[in-house]
Amino acid sequence: MSNAFIGYGSTLMVSDNNSPSDYVAIAELTSITPGPMSTGVVGVTHLTSPNTHQEKIPGIKDTGAIKIAGNYLPVDTTQGSTGKGLMALWKARTIANFKIVLNDGVSTTLGPFTGFVSALAPGDVVVDNKVAFTGEITPTTQGTLP
Image: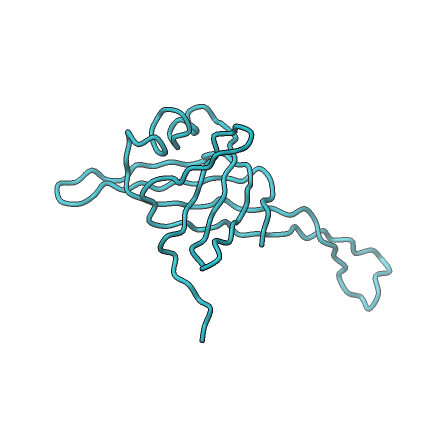
């Protein structure tokens, strides 16, 4: 039998930055897409490289932005303009502590990591549909990976 799991019940959490940290789940997210993990490639080829072949070594690692989407709740404490709401974090350019907790049967945690809200976009306000939002959290450090 497969050990696959569905995303339902997974959360992106933000810390209050107290010690010890108290994390709260960002309300009503519909998707969390972890950013790509990459390693730079540094060319070290020289005039006498063996076998007339390019030589490379690993460079600096980077973690791309975590993309999120959800139901837009402008007055919710986790999305709004006060406290640790996403809009408040974006307005103040705050670097905060985040973590992703997966609903994989063991609550695997991706993070904690520090990052900032690098994009936030409320969706279309229309007659007969919910108002959604999208956003991005750009990591400033490598988080703990399982």
